[in-house]
Image 1: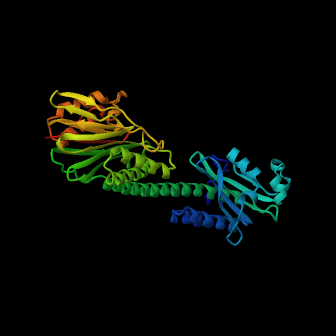
Image 2: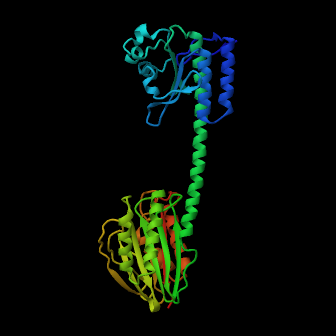
Image 3: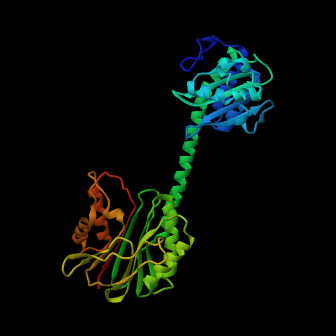
Length: 429
């Protein structure tokens, strides 16, 4: 019987295999196929290779994400783990095998002209050494190294053939184990992100508030599993409701965590302060006292009260839009302030707002106006204004849905590049 070894990557022609080597290779293959626990497999295989080759020690290195080889297994006789393996092998041989991609056998390293300049060979008293690369297809993913410091001529071509065959099987097993670990990690991450998404949803208001003379609706869409956008309705008393819309500077999990902190601070201060300016100023100071992330959050906070009276404060956020029913016109509220989390003292100015029956106020994040189509053209404020004008006579929820459809029709198949959030407030009088 023959084992096909040393082909494309330095393997010899078809060579008769020793029965004990065939038995070992069979056992090794069974072991490799019996588990997807990479550490368990590699330790078991290395122990068997040391046993059959008569090696004093065995080492297995794998290529890391940065391209460098790192020790994964370092074993001695009696299945003993070896500490500091980088100081116990010939790095001259390791580098040579890595550079050439070819296996290397020396029966007496002390007098081998190919590696005569290796300082570690002399210092460690190394004699018999086998080192074989591990390939997956045409990609070298690591190497296996065994040696004996006591005797010369311990290893021969048969041992090299066995080690090459083992490396071939190990390469397949390592790749399978890695793919399995990636799949498990991906599944775990997806599960955790779904949980985080649901937690974020639970932080948002479940229903729109009921306030005499007002009709309100909101929508929240995350570009990733979790988002940095948020909105909030805060019941202040029987006649006043606070409306918050905000956008954290980052995306993904960091933004989601920052979003949760910012929302809690704004809500906590809103219920104890009648002034939206003081609410945001206090929240800003608290964010700065704890934040170490260099993130910030833009916010618009408005309080709506009886007879269409409202007061709003802008902290670096997009300018809210107001549709005036009497004149069928659109206006954007002034820019103002700076985002929370930048400076301890930020300029915040209250803006008085008077709504008449039929007027509509739209709060939004830049995921709406900056949504792009396939030509990289943004949706923009003018299209937003047109969408609001087209649906202004409808209930708040219908207005919101019309804007959402307009954005989706405009961007087509382009994936969302940012979170998007809207709040629509319609004054019915």
